[in-house]
Image (tube, rainbow, N blue to C red; front, side, top):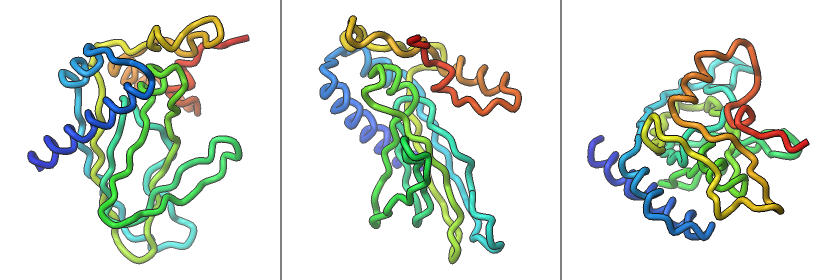
Length: 189
């Protein structure tokens, strides 16, 4: 697992470099903060669905951090279509890695890149395993919208936040369906 963690981190950083270049952000400090930052590996195991109607393996959510790379053993990922709020099945080519934009990439890009609400569903014929690699800044490091992407025509859309702020949000939530990224949005009215 150690070699996989090192290699998937390299891939994540390369993808993020390309994203930052596409945004016109050539700031070495972003790469430095990501290199100093966190990487979480989560191995999720989902049983075969044995009961009709019982299909959700992991509730709908968006990923915290900048980027999440997921290596699944078989199909079972659904994404919410932003406008219709309907669920769409993600195709699973063999040996493919899913790349998810996280909440902090949405904040840094000031909404140019959008986080993805998704869920895991149970497979009707076999158990499913996925390995998720989540990448972000250090725990207390605040992420804010890049100054280059904010102007009069494109006002700042999000409050800054850190991973610690995210954990505090999770611990303080009481039956509130608001997502973390929604809690960071600045009202434009």
